[in-house]
Image 1: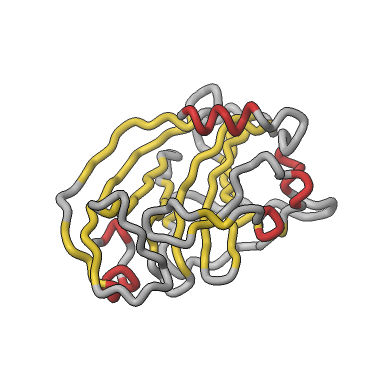
Image 2: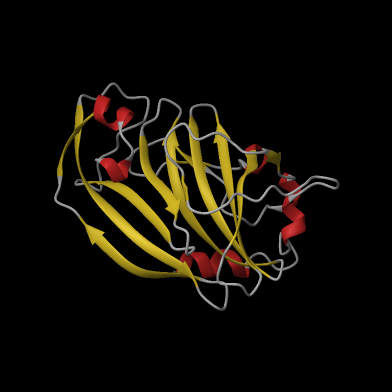
Length: 210
């Protein structure tokens, strides 16, 4: 939570409004709920974001399975991936931004209330050969499920491009809602037993099916 607050404190006067994400004349395409961001899900209407307006936002990708090796200064590679209007009212919206560069991709959810940015949440990251270490989906009530695979050895550094045979990891499911203040609030988390995943398994299945 500290990191989210820190990011937002640095956004005064920058990327505060929903309109900052869209260039003049661009149309916001609203995706209906429910929605699963399964592997291979395409953009609905990709809109490149003006990097000069999002310098304070956490737009970067990862090179490793643990999500520790950042590819920084990637604002120029950010696009609107999906735009949702939440059913709870209060003019709550979520814009999912995809940061995609070379073989790496990361998803960041931005929450807006009445058109103003209120919070952000990392929602997913993967490689372009479909190794996903974090994925997301939103149900018809606007509840968000973030499913992650966490390596047992937090110090282990495995790159997406490495020719590894298998890794030992556990699955973590986290459930969030956007509250009345427009903040992402975690409601629940479920941790599953650790097991071995081959590289082929990581490339084949969505995390919630593993």
